Amino acid sequence: MAKAKTTFFCQNCGTQYSQWLGQCKVCGEWNSIVEEIIEKSSNHPISSLSSSSSKNKIYRIHEIETKDEFRIFSNDSELDHLLGGGIVPGSVILIGGEPGIGKSTLLLQISLQIPRKVLYVSGEESSNQIKMRSDRLAISNSECYVLTETSTQKILKKAHELQPDLLVIDSIQTLHSSYIESSPGSISQIRECASELIKYAKETSTPVFLIGHITKEGSIAGPKILEHMVDVVLQFEGDRNYVYRLLRANKNRYGSTSELGIYEMLSSGLRQVKNPSEILLSKKDVSLSGNAIAVTLEGLRPMLVEIQALVSTAVYGTPQRVTTGFDVKRLNMLLAVLEKRAGFLLGSKDVFLNVTGGIRVDDPAIDLAVICAILSSNEDISLPDNCLFAGEVGLSGEIRPVNRIEQRILESEKLGYDVVFISKYNKIDCKKYNIRIELVSKVEDVYKLIF
Image (cartoon, rainbow, N blue to C red; front, side, top):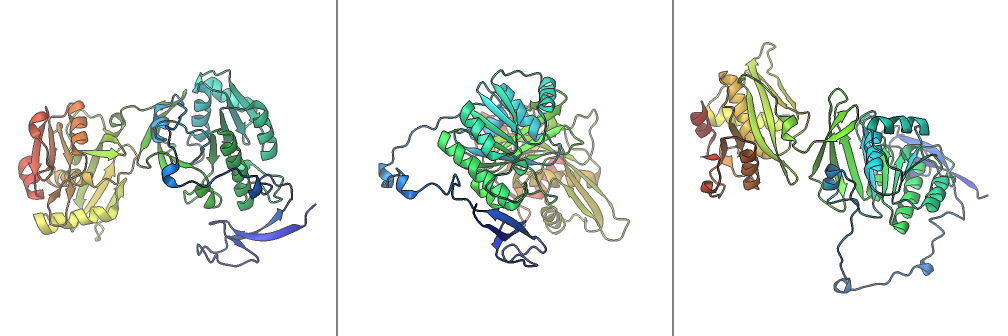
């Protein structure tokens, strides 16, 4: 047996040190360095690879032949769309999220509905618990195999015997490798287990899904290098008190990171939400002040979101600026524009802003809807139910054009709205649409047209 070696790792960034330090020199975190024991073995599956056995050849870049990339369809259109058209063979996909948010349910649901041989490995649940969840999902797949194991060597041995088309690991923090003597969930164990699974995925062209726990700060537990090693990092978001879940791509080597998948959590599993506007617009019988509808984009998908604003007199001396799903600094900027350029006295009033549906929107095209919602609440006059807004507001009070305005207008028209307010600097042909388009250049123009 090789001699055991003691090393020190930063729990935050994974940097290795030869001795203990109070503060990590790389990330600056205090009291994050812990001692771990590493067992170096000569028969390590990764270190045993020699450069002489490699058959790789050096090519000029123009000599490399490109071919269409084969994708595996999971029968989950939201996930396939998020991954850029399907699962790439040999890819390693890491999914992180809060406890109880639905990570295991999502991957078990995919394992049961994909028409391929799947090996579902769980280090957290027994086979009976997994069977109970599958019965609740009411989906059957005779080619879905379950293994409850935490040793990566035993998992890979069973995988080589079964030769599945898809491997699911729940979760990476529960695995341990016999080549490392530290405990499961430690920096070195997570890195070693991930390396072995990535090596298996690349050699056999088998896609691997990894479930990752997250820290109290919201980042995926373990070394940051884990996110660099995998091909795709997905974040499963949502509040356990609400039924909607959002799946975002933080990293994607095979597609865009601007896409968004939306699910509804039901007793029978996760339902794909084809029309996101149905959850982002509130159903109300009467017109209320402070509500405005904006047309935003998440990747290639246009969506309608409802902006709610409440403006009231400040009773605690210092006015409050509170936002949910919107940048509070941008709200302060828009309020300053209304004061300076349009003459509205809002400096002594509390302003509360909410984006419905529990999502966070960074698209500057919702600026116009935010301003109209604030003005509507300030004047206590409701906006027309049939109008939408898509425009960025500049510091001079001008309405700036936004990208891909045609898609936004078509989405508004498809959902039955009558009027859309956009910047007059967007170069479009208004006659080819069946929706009335109001072209505005300044905040004052919008106020005159609506109020």
